[in-house]
Image (cartoon, each protein chain N blue to C red):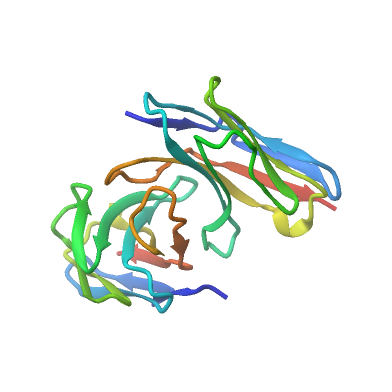
Length: 114
Length: 114
């Protein structure tokens, strides 16, 4: 079974600084998708970024970028120029082809210090 | 503002009550999902509807009964719930159930069972 591991339960970053959240996963599949979702206290899960395993180029979305290392099964999220609104729980998620569910990691709670 | 609307936002019910959670989206998405999320945990998939047909039931107890009356609406009927069913219930939708399709989440319904 596929598993997703987020080894940092909590992280903090100074406003305007850069922070990296780690995620590793275990799979025997060769093609799949990886996602980072953000869940602020408002509760809504918001998609931050996604990456297809067949694409070697790392995905970027404004201040958010990933470091995707397929061989190492690692998918870290880098947040640049951190803002107070970035404070949230961040979930890494994996999904493979077929009628399969989205598999979430346990989450990393990010605090942003003014 | 979320594009997936869930009502009610909060619900308190006794173990003998019958209530329903409602989820609505008008993005033309053909896949809809119910998740259960306990505090400080990732969401757990309960049900998936694809083109208004139930495609995944993650062995959810029968006291939870999903219904998809049309492509925009998803209900979760609740009956004889247990205290351990207290949780945040999230609805999500995606264009289809394809692996790369991002899921758009609602704000959730916070359910408390007395």
